Length: 70
Image (tube, rainbow, N blue to C red; front, top):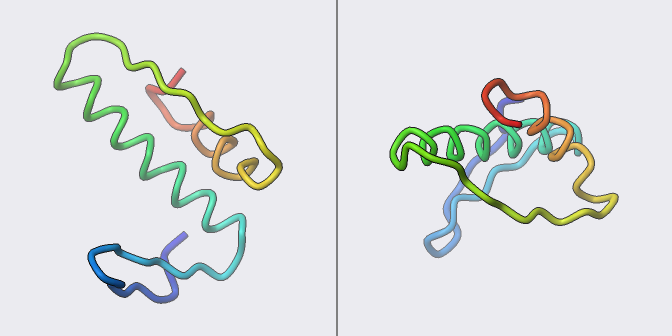
């Protein structure tokens, strides 16, 4: 799940992965960490709307498998 290559374009960090699955897993894990951080800091719930398209399947699957995210 580690990026093959990482670089900065303007002010954006770009990560290159070897597959769509690896990219989805990394994105899901990163977003789960951000959600958990928000949940800790606000002591409440977080409401988020996600895209629901075939291109998001790997990301959404990984996010659904992350502990503490329901």
